[in-house]
Amino acid sequence: MKHGKISSRILSLTAIAVVGAGLAACGGGASSTAAGANSATTAKGPIKIWYSNNEFEVKWGKEMVASWNAAHPDQQVDAQEIPAGKSSEEVIGAAITAGNAPCLVFNTAPVAVPQFQKQGGLVPLDSFPDGAQYIKDRTGDLANQYKSSDGKTYQLPWKSNPVVLFYNKDIFAKAGLDPEKPKLATQSEFLDTARTLVKSGAVANAVWPSPASDFFQSWFDFYPFYAANSSGTNLIKDGKATFDSDQGKQVATMFQTLYKENLASKETYKGDSFADGKAGMSLAGPWAVAAYKGKVNWGTVPVPGTQAQTNGSTFSDAKNVAMYSSCKNQGTAWDVMKFATSKEQDGKLLSETGQMPMRKDLTTAYADYFNQNPAYKTFADEAARTVEVPNVTNSVQIWQTFRDAWGKSVIFGNQSIDDAFKGASDKINQLAAQK
Image (cartoon, rainbow, N blue to C red):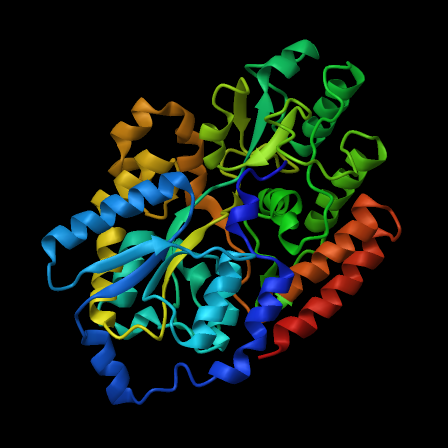
């Protein structure tokens, strides 16, 4: 279950700590007067933007910017990849502190938004007359997950990588399993299939989720299965942790069984265990289609729930677009944001990266693409039923608290699941209550 682009796409706990350290220095970043704010939101002129260093997104970004610049000679966009650093979020946080962040970043992690907002580094998109309506019209109800606790939206839902279960057809066949109709509809079947894969000698590990303690690792083992089990319940709902429940503990028990029966390794794999044929199954999003091309004869199924289901939920693994408060020409920045997330540009993003634009009309707007690229249909279907990380203060610390409890109980068996989840839930409730 190694996430193929994880190292370049998400942040470290240290990075967020560095970001947080800049609070005192830039706490007034969003304290401009109402008149100043209003003039900024209408100001037009040159802007700077950053986009991901993923090669496919770089190609899309360059083409998008060239198209805009050709039509707007007096509002030129200066674009570059996010500067190198320990993580994108550390670089962005430092730029907020220094007051020189770009106008737009097309790679803003939802988990970092509460911290950036606390720094005063973000512009609420509702401040534009058509802001709230544009987001609603484009994204639909899924946009509600991206609202902050103050009721405002500081990130435009942009693209998601809905997590599904990949399986290696050749390894399944070697184990005597049907590679075209695998028994993976329920978590019970998932466990039985995992046992068959290993006991047959077809592969050493049925799955190989990372056992590392990084807070984000739970997005690629626990969270997709929990979403499938709980009809898309967020880790936190109404300010309270939700995972200390029958649905949450059932997922934990399933993974605990995988580790106890040596169906999954407790060692960290350096590389992609699925692509390297070291694991028979993997949790990943549509980015993996290109990554596994020519390496694995794969198939996919929705993440199994306790019961077989046709409309199960999963983790979104989204990246969004945010506008930063140091931007002088916010009127142009908003226009560029809408241009870059238009139906035409979203279609180009889909065709060039395989990632799912967060549009309520995704499957109908690009019906021809999905007919011509059936491998992506599963992801498009799942994109409408994704759950995001909680948009709450202390989001990273909350996930780290959960991950620590998961490691102690599920992976290494040093504490009962009941005790670990109860303790983590209590601590997370305290963290979530802080402002």
